[in-house]
Image 1 (cartoon, one colour):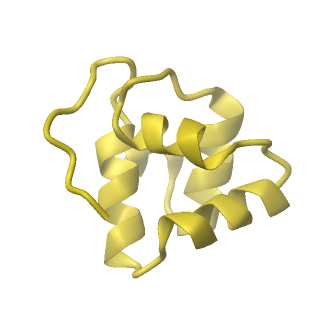
Image 2 (cartoon, one colour):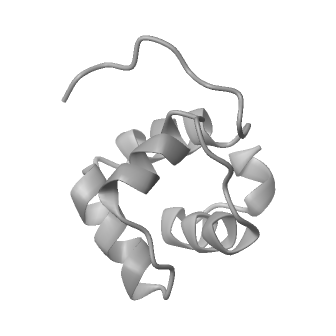
Image 3 (tube, rainbow, N blue to C red):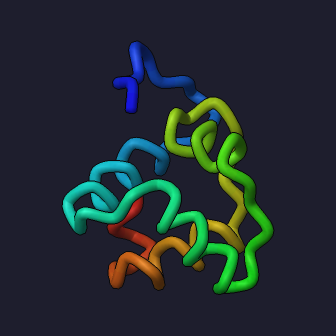
Amino acid sequence: MRKRKTLGNANIVGANIEKLRKEQHISQKDFIARIQVAGVDINPTSYSKLEGQTRIATDKEIFAIAKILGVSVDKLF
């Protein structure tokens, strides 16, 4: 996978989500599947843009991601 050259400014959680996901050795593909199982409809492109901070993260996505990562919502910020 390519390393991002720059981050956007559409959200402030994307970089932290990516860091936490990688610390837990979860691939993007597996993480997206877990998010979808949690009831959040998200596709790979949309998720990649969330991590790259080029799109807004919804409250539903943030809640599900925190739960999947086993951290508080505050930890994502």
